[in-house]
Length: 141
Image (cartoon, rainbow, N blue to C red):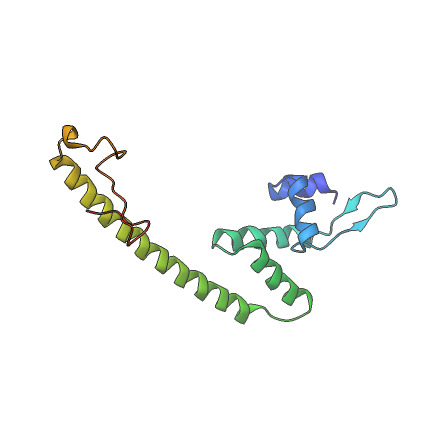
């Protein structure tokens, strides 16, 4: 099938397909006598895998590794398992960070209700949020 048909069926743009070819997640198709890309039907399955992999948080680089294993005739399942474990750990860490941020924000909003705007130091920007030299990125509460 031609690039426009594959793009329509996969719900991506032709530009995306060319990009996927360039970075190696989609194999380059054969060309027709007139030079048009001629994709095999299994390209649609590959695009479905790419989309599903992105949905669970894999990067295109990671997807490229997985499809390279498959293209060499190797089962990529163990590699995918390791990627999913790593992604799960990253999410757990991010969730912990977000929960800490939520606690900080709740403390700030509680403190903000008790502060008088007229007490704001004119040399600072806003006394509701103060930086701490010892812990950059953290708010005092």
